[in-house]
Amino acid sequence: MSVEVKTTCAYCGVGCGIKAKVSEGGAVTIAGDESHPANYGRLCAKGAALGDTIKLDDRLRYPEVNGERQPWSVALEHVATRFEQAITEHGP
Image (tube, rainbow, N blue to C red):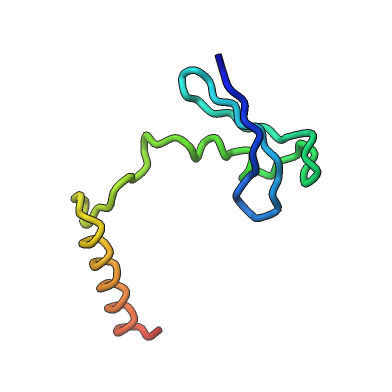
């Protein structure tokens, strides 16, 4: 049994209505909500591809530094240090 949820697209702030349909296997398909006054069922390319952004297979789900998993504190310190170096070398 698949489940359909009416919700709002979060891409640009217009607030288009979407219908997200989740299949038993976990696949998500997105369609415009014809009854929603912001878009009457129409979707832009980003909204139409929203289902593709839900997949986690190839997404980074924890911080890595130089290809190795690190705690958030280490990763954030690394980013801050690199920003500081870039600003020192090239200006703000």
